Image (cartoon, rainbow, N blue to C red; front, side, top):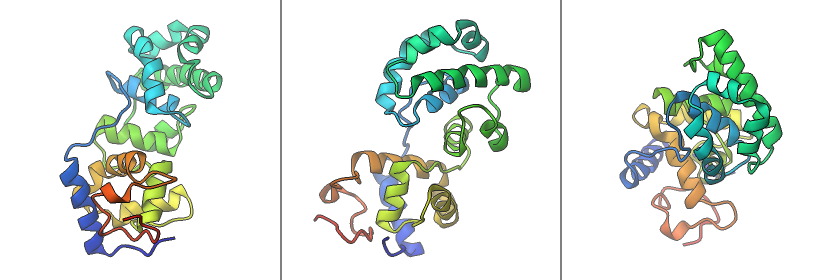
Amino acid sequence: MAKKLTKQQIHQFYSLLQAENPEPQGELEHGNLYQLLVAVVLSAQATDKGVNKATKPLFEKVHTPQQMVALGLDQLTDYVKSIGLYRNKAKNVIALSEQLITNHDGEVPNDQKALEALPGVGRKTANVVRNIGFGEPTIAVDTHVFRVSNRAGLAPGKDVVAVEESLNKRTPKEFLLHAHHWLILHGRYVCVARTPKCQQCVVRDVCNFKDKIL
């Protein structure tokens, strides 16, 4: 585990990521809050690119939980069968759609506990939906965020909850809104798992990764 960055280093770390990408965007394609929720649920242990390929024709037809329930499990399964764990994910999407209709008037709630109560929606999914959909300063910790946080010394932690709590405490307020996007994209394209691309990394000078390749 890398040595923790100082407050000054953390500010510089985010400032450099911000300068490179001032307005980072999520890569899951969607047209409204409901489609965002569905896309994030489908993206667990799958690539955004693969999810977008499957949801493009689905989202042309389905825009609301009512339309999803009307579509039915069998047809939904056909749309998402190229995605890993598709059978269970399809069941969850139908079930969460039914719960949105029953408990939330068909609307996606901006509430962590309410979102986590939906089938297939965990802590990370709820954080992503609240951040992208509602502009809340939440930080969702996936494998990329976990790796970057530990490798750089930004917010070391033994599990995703510990890293999330540390990131929330250590990230300056001015960077909270976009923090998880910067870290996800950085981990996905630069600070990759096997051979990090340190030579093209904008935060290499403040990163505490002991095995930097410069």
